[in-house]
Length: 103
Image 1: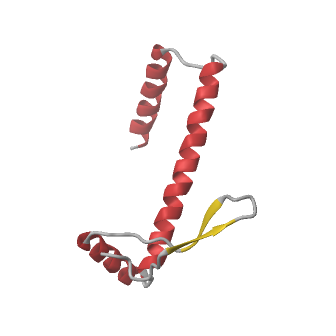
Image 2 (image 1 turned 90 degrees about the horizontal axis):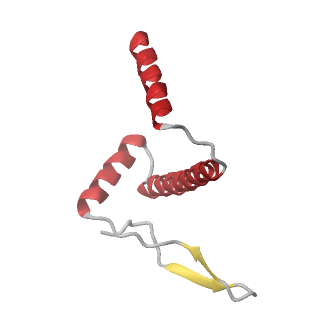
């Protein structure tokens, strides 16, 4: 099933010859997923398109964040800023102990 508010994608060429997409993108959803999306939209008093836009925005934002964090971690490894296995175990044990005390 297609998201009803979606049109076909349009293309335009920049002066440099790079291809960019403008307009909208077509998204094919299973009937089950479309029903869940419609139900969710109705419960929130929103339209399905705004929910899809928010979901894609979150996904892209998360992926950007995740890749930056991986790059930070790799840079730390290259600089030799790593923990020994025993130190990791010790820190985890300490965190778990502190959490159990709060409960």
